[in-house]
Image (tube, rainbow, N blue to C red; front, side):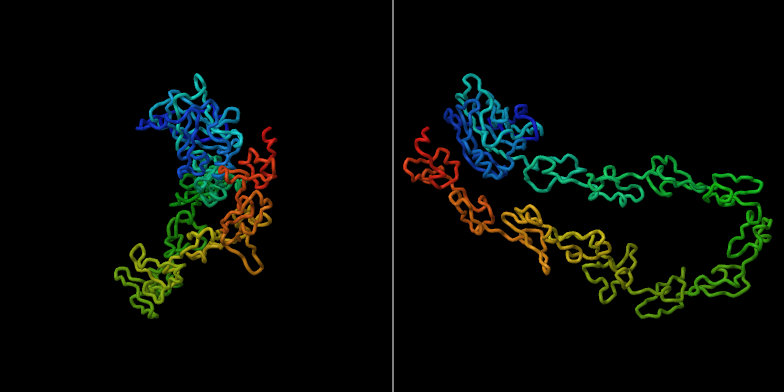
Length: 626
């Protein structure tokens, strides 16, 4: 039987409540050697695999073999589990209530189901059922977050046979082999952040943890959205808690501005748009529409008449849309460049231009552009360039500067003018020497021709070049950081030196330190470089910002319990970092402490006691016998 079981320990609940669903896939398998395992024995072989980082199960690769085992019988040697957890660096994560993960492949010759797991917590934990001898079934199961957790201290638990065996209570005439065992803390790769709009998953892979605080980073409105700039006049940021509120959308971070909250349309020329309650905005353009003279009727129609041709005019009153029936109401002295109202025009009664208007003559007219037109003379009716002036053509003009060229002539539509600006054009950008687009880190050549395939001309940055804005440059983190939006405004460049601020070491926290400055800025392996009046340290790593603390400068206070590690390049300032433990006894008997005092023998728990003296490692022989 091949049985692969994967368990994800979660935040709360008891393992005894877990139910596993098995999905079978029949494979070829041989268990020829399994039946030879002796009754009442458990054999452990070892290798930590890359597929299971931080594997804490003792000798996990080849696994655990057992037979003749009784209910709740320990399957691991005392101390093996605690040692393996410590060596794997997982000791800080073995805490009551901490989520862990267990997986293995099980081979069984038993005709009945069993269950293995860890003892403790009243009901055990990380309990895994092993099905009766079905043929080579691979099973995977993910446990919900409230179904399991670490329920016992590491020193007080062991991996045991949890399920009671029928009959004698002993596994008889069969054996079980657990292979590829993986026991590790749950890590953030297994965890899904609760809301993508409020949280983003950390990028670090394999980080231990199984909750929001360990695996997710908050997304704050202040970093994700600019309510005012997103849709000006339609949104504003929430007055309360905006800087600390989580979210990345207008519905979470912003307050809509609605037309019905503003009194914008209370004039004779404006009225509310239809369904104003549903219109978002804070301006006349958003919320109002014009009242048109075409939609009103003049009051006192005997004295007033609609202004002719003014239906599209804005208004709703007589003063805005109507006129008295005088010359001013009946006659338009137009065009203005041919006619002008007579004196007292507003009081004259009439309906014809001859009655109400005077002809306009060219005598006092000045041509609109003296470089393009010259006056024809006096006695001619009119008051515009067409009637009173004659054109000056660029075809007759000579450019004043050799760097200029005549604009192309068009006989059908001749150009008017008598100046360089009107009749000449500068050379093409591509023809300029030296190059105008310098420095190259700040300016980039525009195309020789524009979108209409017209040659680009000019001699300035604005005419011939496109600016390279620093706002588009990605600073080389962590040694450089992006300048503030205010500093970046209008700043040109494409290099770290032009566009970025160097990161100061004063913000960096050295490895093994707790804070960037102050007493806690010194760790056990690094301490912070200090700025002076004439020198400032820049960087964002240990090499740039910190000085190493070497074990060679540290001396233990318990030399009988510790021996210095051989690697002279080690960094540290603690016993654990710089020394190896000296144990009273070891697995090799030749390495055990030899008691010098007569009548003294090595203590029974010497394997777990540090020391190298009689006082630390020995007891009287008669005391040991008791």
